[in-house]
Length: 195
Image (cartoon, rainbow, N blue to C red; front, side):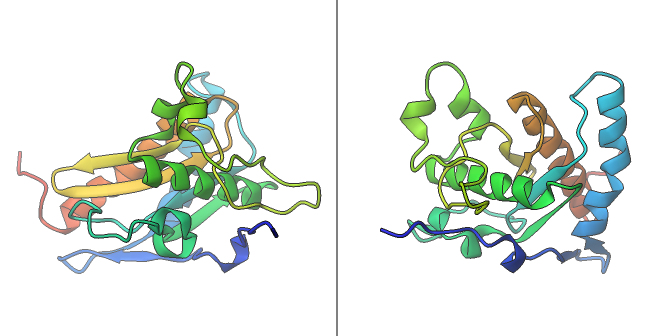
């Protein structure tokens, strides 16, 4: 049986979210705007230092993903809304992030939870390496932390980061990227409570 490959160049590198107040959030600009803060966190020892980063996310939702077909988790075209990143290994890290999301959507939980303890073999299926011997990104589960779900009010964001040597760092940065995006969407959609 021929292995299925993930073609990174075919994924959406440009995406925007239009808020109810007319504000347009360019997702690539949002991600790029966090490059310096992420690098600063690395220099302060809060997270590891990295030269490359890969990020992937699903479309922001204001409801749970219960209406999706049972196998949507196995079709990147059905759940990948945006990918981006920076550095020499960007495509490899984007591939890792997308393949982390595969496991998250199938199992219904953040991949870090699946990695803790001795649970890896329980949750991850069709496990793949970063690249095969030909440099291809084989489709399957990339069994590491970093794919997360962020809920704010009725807003639900799913995404993943790959680049750090530590699963927890991937998880933290994915939550940072999605959390700051969720805040912008809530403000733009008039859902953030007044203080």
